[in-house]
Image (cartoon, rainbow, N blue to C red):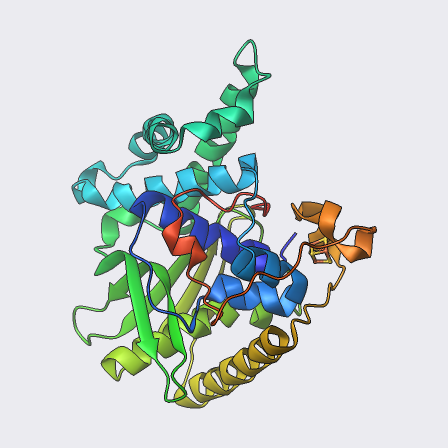
Length: 311
Ligand code: SF4
């Protein structure tokens, strides 16, 4: 499954989990994952951002967090030691580190009496890490940044923010490459541009911050062993800015009218809130009173938003 919201959630989940609790930024901010929530289902956006309802952990999203952690820490090693064997050997310690930070994740394996489910799950994470080496050679890379927090404020006052998995800078030219890892599969033909929305978002933020349009946006799909690349230009990023402004207007309208429509789709299969969703016969709780809508909930909570499958 390549639903935009699912793909983006993997990324932010990983970032927040490894970074731990962060200070909440002021209101009026938007991240790619929250933007994707609203585009996929306004009611889901409400549940996550306005109600801030908890979601149970999922093994898929947690595996995404572990794999992201390994790929981040891999570059702490000297180049010659960035081998598949080393990386695979980092999977279990990364899981144990995450578990120690978030003990509730043990609930993913409570019925696993003989430990086989955990072992299978770790093996699947190891397989994804191993596949990374078929796509890139980390011995030839020296990232400029890893797990980089970026934010900028648009003229409208809307603040954009998020975490870039990896930022590479060409030594000779200074050109930037923005890299994001996905543990899912590459999108089907025709859905590539939709998948690139998150990357254009980051490119826009970096452009606004540094006055430099990234040369290349690169999505690394470990699930299918594919790389999606895109070369943005200023026109692309201006269009992204207009799209985000329109999206924010729509979010504000929903907020002011307390009108958050469900939009049933395949994403519902992974939604933790079906029981209170009108599309499934449920009744949402009253909308909490908030003076402003802010999507910073994910930065306040160290727990992964694991209700969204990392596929
Ligand atoms: S169940 Fe589906 S329609 Fe309802 S809130 Fe979740 S994603 Fe939206």
